[in-house]
Image (cartoon, rainbow, N blue to C red; front, side):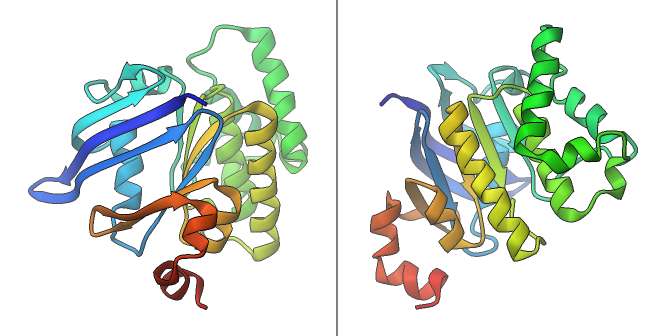
Length: 237
């Protein structure tokens, strides 16, 4: 299987504060990789660096194209969709208009309509809320909308930042089952940042553990689950 994301020597900073210190990691095409770590470890910054949202150095290669010098809008056009923590929906717009906004770089109008229906097949509740203002959706519905809007880009790589944050356990379970379907049925590669390590490792096939901006452990999800440090610190047993 080919590598869709290859990162070498990734550094990132906020002004004078360095957050990432030379990360090396990769993601196989069609795979799901998760980045684990405590708050402040640099997980969200890693996704922001890939998306061009923070100052960064290093090599970020996606599908054979170097992205580290591109602007965020140009990175999006390369098929990289970012679902940020906090969802980031446009609260005064309707659910369906939010979805259409996700396809703003596309010109294939007929296929856009088909993709809206495909999103509705994954998230039937959004079809029921299609004319409702996004700001009136529940937390779970808003998160589903954020993922659905990202899918409207037809991404080859989906960056997910804490998709379970603030959601009820049953909604989280439903959402992660849908993410698995999207990965398997549509072949969308995913890089997942998730505080719930057990949930993340269940979805992912590979994992990296970050501590203070450095990768300290990496391996398959199964091997990470067997790691005593990870089990005690992040899984609670």
